[in-house]
Image (cartoon, rainbow, N blue to C red; front, side, top):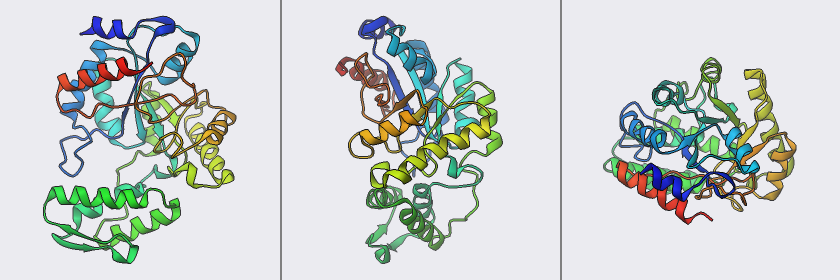
Length: 314
């Protein structure tokens, strides 16, 4: 299979860069998080990527893409947000296969924080079976009968809250979590020490704002502050410059726009990634590189989806 991928993505100016997106890697499969791979699944994913692609950190890949000097079947593995399982579960697997990865960190949630969406997810985990009345938040009444209904329920709530101003959605999420008995303290996200350890082990660290807002929903001054302060906090923690950035949520034209691209460039980043599902090519904007993940549960389907994405990217 490796020769076919190299044929679809040759070296040099015609190269296509596959950038894979992940968020979490769970020690064991969690039916409430059906889209997050377990350690067992991630192991075969990384084994396939390591055997098929030439994997490198994003900053190197972006530089080589711009120079027309990518190797055949070039790829980058990325993680968003800063979950502790990135270090505890994913990193040992990445090391086992000798591949690098780039981790984008939303700094406000380090040291015991929890992202607003995880407040909602954990609320739906702990809520008693029956009706969960969220009408005071204009979120309706959710009927929780089994795990599938809990997944459907939180997906609806997340969809409705996603584009609210961050302070509003965070406050609503915390109130729902408190109502359902979700504790304030948690170890879901990395600590400062864990982040420094991950960086010291050779992982590339990138910016992802402070509070993971939808930039398009903010005024320009606040959006710029989110981008810049996230970068500054990481650089202070790591004592090293941070070169790459990921737009929160990352859909071009909906979650961010050209003015945010300019902010990222002016902040001193060298490259940035979106969540537009494609491969990067020589014509791609280095500050809007596309990313994708084949959410498939078997190695063959994962390989085919990766191959189709490369073939469709022009």
